[in-house]
Length: 187
Image (cartoon, rainbow, N blue to C red; front, side, top):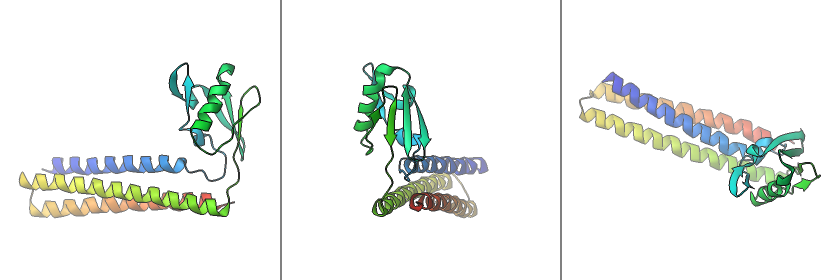
């Protein structure tokens, strides 16, 4: 029976790790005013008729704290790259210099910074909802194990352990949010 319990524990941890990864990915999309190549991670470019991630048709780097450079591997892709950046609706105005694309990242206003912090907190709430769903699934698995002969004490210990795991992961996303909030609010 302990083998099945360990399987339930491993499953809830794996699900919570995926939730944390999703949360971190969502936070990467929230820009903190500094240029970062990951800001263009969601940009898709029409590469000879098929939508392709920008990173597969160009080299994306930062020139300084306020400028992102996109160096296409084929010069003929300049217009498509610019169109893809505009269509991604990220609020950037790409400029071509004939060789590549330059994107100037505007400084954030105080109001915009607060909005971004609210957005980050909303993403944290989504992560917490994910943890609660994972906990519910794990507890359901424990109940089915109880029907198969799991003792009352092992059931209680399992519920307590799953709650501890949930609390640990909740603290982890709260710490990630504090770091992101500091990053956003720093001018």
